[in-house]
Structures are given as structure tokens and as C-alpha cells.
Amino acid sequence: MTANILFSARPALWPIYEPLLRRGLDDAGLDYCLSTDIAPADVDYVVYAPNSGLMDFTPFTRLKAVLSLWAGVETIATNETLTAPLARMVDHGLTQGMTEWVVGHVLRYHLGMDRHITVQDGVWTPDAPPLATQRHVCVLGMGTLGEASARALAALGFHVTGWSRTPKTVPGVICQHGAKGLRTALSSTEIVILLLPDTTETENTLNADTLSLLPRGARIINPGRGPLIDDDALLQALNSGQVGHATLDVFRVEPLPPDHPYWAHPNVTVTPHIASETRPATAAQVICDNIRRGETGAPFVHLVDRALGY
Ligand code: NAP
Image (cartoon, rainbow, N blue to C red; front, side, top):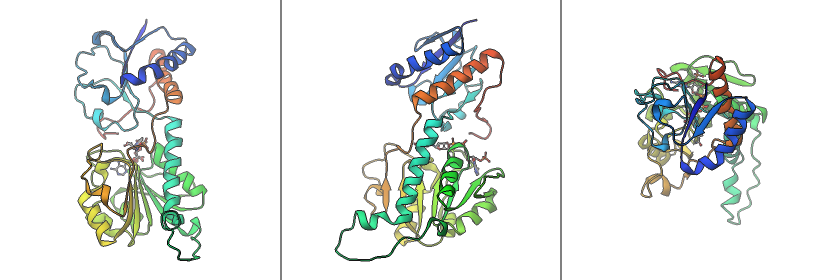
């Protein structure tokens, strides 16, 4: 049987992904039709990004799976018209990019780089930074991206705590979970990295209460999703000095509106959702592997738990 594969993402991605997907599907020995235009009732797989505009899956009556090009699936995980399995993107290239971004921004804070890069005021202050072994950092979310970042930070010598929903064991990382574990993790951390998914459970993970647990002057790095932070509470904590600085890559509204207080705040760095992205060369292999699995009766990998929302 021919597997009909609909590519439903930004049109600009089609010329990039088409040859990569064809190569992977050919290598897998599959009989397939790959197109941006297949009648919904004939589609077996959708290679999907939410900004394609496809939101109603009702006419896709023989769908075997939706294969997301994005790691964050909050806009589709709750879509009630979708009953077929949904796989999120777990891509080595995306993980590597996120790890590099997180380590870079942690090192910026740890080494106090701004002091010497942006301030050249003629004042000679020969204070060497502490070693990573003296710095406590915490990664909220210990999934694909959080665990990779936590491991990389631990390899540099940082004192790393990771927090997740379920218990974990990760070499070199103190693992906490659940509501009590969050309070323990935050109470000693100087740099917090958010790599949680956006779900009803994770909204406002950092709020007035949890921000108050941090040691005064702690730094926040959010490459996860905007709703993980209560913005008003963070602005208040920044203004009072409870939070020393925040680096924010993701926001409740994107692009971040020009009049949003984050843009002008002296203790906020805004980056435009560029922490990492799906890398076509490696992501196409992941998509093709899941289609091969579907066509050979093997279980799909990277499936989203629709009840949990990630
Ligand atoms: P993932 O593998 O699904 O991991 C999610 C982690 O969050 C897991 O460790 C999970 O715990 C934990 N978690 C979920 N709900 C929780 C809760 N209620 N309490 C405590 N922990 C909870 O996701 P991922 O691939 O690492 O991606 C994480 C997020 O990064 C994505 O959802 C997306 O929003 C974001 N992202 C951003 C960019 C960017 O450029 N800024 C790029 C890609 C992804 P368990 O392990 O116990 O299940």
C-alpha cells in the first residue's frame, strides 16, 4: 500500500524538507506519495507545523499519525478533532542548539560577562568569577532538552538540580520532582532555566510565591514557553531586586509587542524565540523513521500523552 504523506507547514519549508524526506523514505524502502496537496480522506501521515493553519482534522478519516516538526505541541495537543497518534519533534540538532544556547546564557551570568563587555567605565575591579562548582543552577523540566542542558552544565562542573513531574536519575544532577521538590530546588538556586512544556499544570510555574523562594538576585533564563512565568510577578521581582536579571526567549504573545515592559527593562534581555529550532537534516530522519515504523507495524516513538499535554 502506498503511504500518502501530506507536508503541512510553512510553504518556505517545503523545498528544504522535500528532498530530505524523499531521501529518507527511499532509504527506508517505502512506497509513498509525498505532497503538499493530498485530499484529506486519503492522507495517512501529516508532517505538521501549527503555523500551516491546519487545525481541523475531522476530514482526515484514515490518518495513522501526525508528526510534528515542533518540540512544543501545546497548540495541537488539545485539538479535539485529532484522534490519531501525535508525535512531537525530538531532533538531535534541536537539542544540540538548545544546549549551546542554555550553556552560553548560563556562562554569561556565571562569569558576569556584562560587567566587562557592556561596562567599560575605567574602574579596575579585579574580582575573578567563582568556579562553576560554587554556582547552583536549576533546570525546570528534565525532558529531552532540559536533561541535555543539565548534563552539559554538570559536565562543566556546575552544581545542577533538575526538576520534573516524575522522579528521575541523571548522573551529576540532583533530581527533584513534584510541588515540594520545586520549592527545594528553587530555594538554593542562583540561575533558573525553564524548559517545561506549556500545559495547564505548568502555567505560572514561576509566580510571586515561587519567585520569593529564590535567593535574592537570582537570574532567570526562559527558553521554554511564555506562560511558564507570571509576567507581572516577574516584573515586580525584577523591580524589587529579588530577581537580578532575566533572559527571555519566549512570551505569551509573540512577537513580543514593542510597548511591552520587558523590552525597556534594564535587567531583561529579550531574544526573539531563537534559542533553538528544528534542524531539517536531522529532523527529516526522525520523521521518516516514524513513518517507517507506522508502515511496518512497529510502535511510533516520541508520542505525546494527550491527557498530560506533552
Ligand atoms: P519534553 O521532553 O516533553 O520534557 C518536558 C519535561 O517537563 C519533562 O521532564 C516533564 O517531566 C517536565 N514536566 C512536564 N509537566 C510538568 C509538571 N507539571 N511539573 C514538573 N515537570 C513537568 O520536552 P522537551 O523536548 O525537553 O521540550 C521542552 C519545551 O521546550 C517544549 O515544550 C517547548 O515549549 C520548548 N522549546 C523551546 C524552543 C525555543 O526555541 N525557545 C525550542 C524547542 C522547544 P517528566 O519527565 O516527569 O515527564
